[in-house]
Length: 40
Image 1 (cartoon, rainbow, N blue to C red):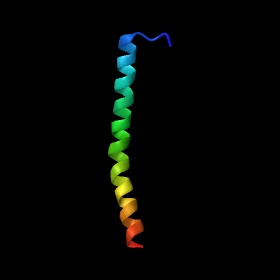
Image 2 (image 1 turned 90 degrees about the horizontal axis):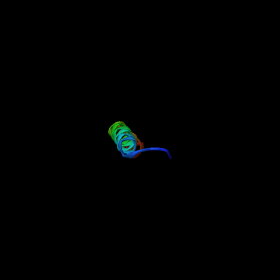
Image 3 (image 1 turned 60 degrees about the horizontal axis):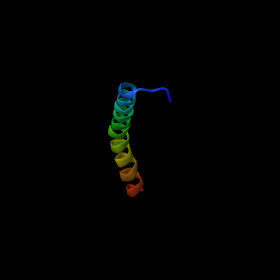
Image 4 (image 1 turned 90 degrees about the vertical axis):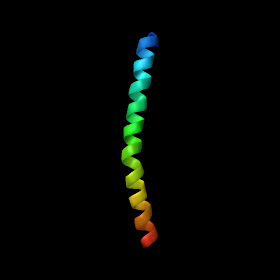
């Protein structure tokens, strides 16, 4: 990887933001799916 420290920090921040967004979306969806399967 020809990546300097700034590039690494930016990549880490981007990955963290993407994971945070996916977590924010998937957690409510997962809760809904779990509630639906429990009700069946």
